[in-house]
Image (tube, rainbow, N blue to C red; front, top):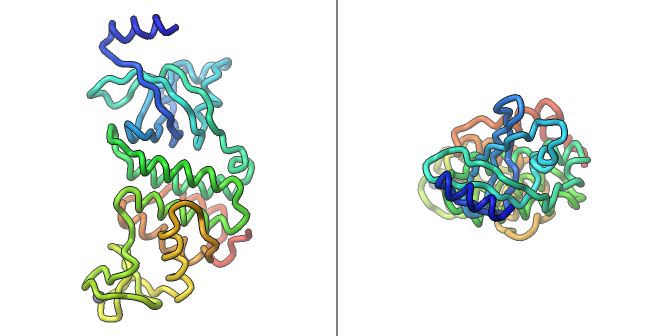
Length: 259
Ligand SMILES: [Zn+2]
């Protein structure tokens, strides 16, 4: 098998590479193939053609389910946007997320952020670590799911250069410490500068705690913070979020989040 791979690599001027990766999404390409997009620490957003994956007996299909953390072998060729997948093995399928409808639905939001902020062929170790840490933690989380995905979203935004300003007014730079305004163009605002909304004292403290806690999700009220972060992310990334549209259809708006 190894010899076969090496011969193939030499013949077609491609190099086999292996990497850990998380499945961001997949789209059908042909009767038998899918293009699967991963986040990988070394290559950033990585699209691979998974040939034969739609055949009934393909063992790859289950491995390439969204959210899965996998070990990949693929053939890398500079300059092409879709690489060829060779093998995959499962590292973690996050069953505790997938069997919980609310967690699975909300987890699609940080996953969509990761796919929007990641770039092709750009080392993304910090972003990858934040995504993996968030998925690891969500499975066993017993608190508000909104709080948890808000924390995940803020950690991904921070890891990719989109951390909101929470200490100084985004317009004039003056210190802000109590229940400020918030502007989606960058963060908190002082009383003299124009906000898009007001933050409650509780909401402001929750946002600060969620940004500051890098390793684990803190206990914090999530409804206001989630509402701020979903709008902030859409404004910063200049993109509507399909996952948030689905959440609005499935769950009642903030204020009645269940768990
Ligand atoms: Zn100001």
